[in-house]
Amino acid sequence: MSYVESNLVPGEAVIYQTRLHWIVMLGHILLGCLLLGLPGVLLLYYALSRTGIESGRLHIMEGGGVALLVCGVVAILLGMVRRNATEMAVTNRRVVIKTGLASRKTIEMLLNKVESIEVSETAFGRMLGYGTIVVIGTGGTPEPFHKVAHPLEFRSQVQQQIEKLH
Image 1: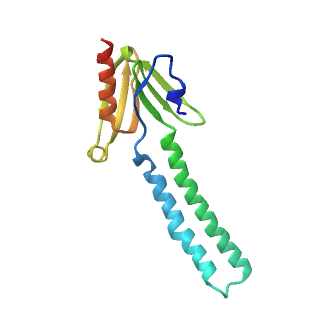
Image 2: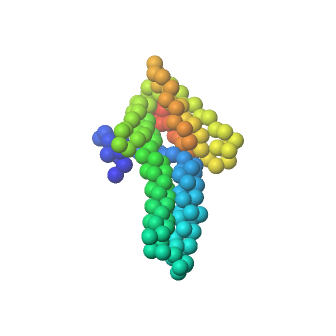
Image 3: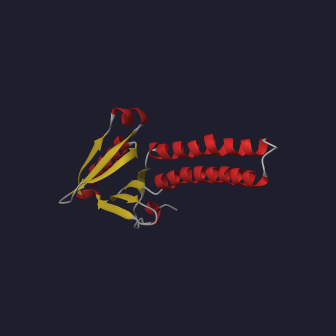
């Protein structure tokens, strides 16, 4: 169960949910593939295909190959955890944004306290469907959230829920 769903008040329903775009994992995926593909697999292949290598060097090569494979998998898993540790939702009463896993930061703003939601998208972000959302509450400071998937839809859902309040 997600953070948002576990913290709903009675009578509150989730209208729209989004999270970070897959682009936040791109660096992790590239690093993971670099470690998995080139040195890790090649080192293991070389160590296992050669017959005249002394056993000490063979164990070092095998251990190095396995270590690179493990590091590659860990890099990709860290990217997945980073992406899934952020939740953004619009309910019929409030906007809820939670970031972090071990240390957590949450913003829960009643819909009638939302002053504006700014959306910034780069050209590349527009093509791939991500951008930055800045939530501004009445009397509050702006809270930017970068690389959010479908930021215009998130803003639209907030605006629709605010209109339903009036």
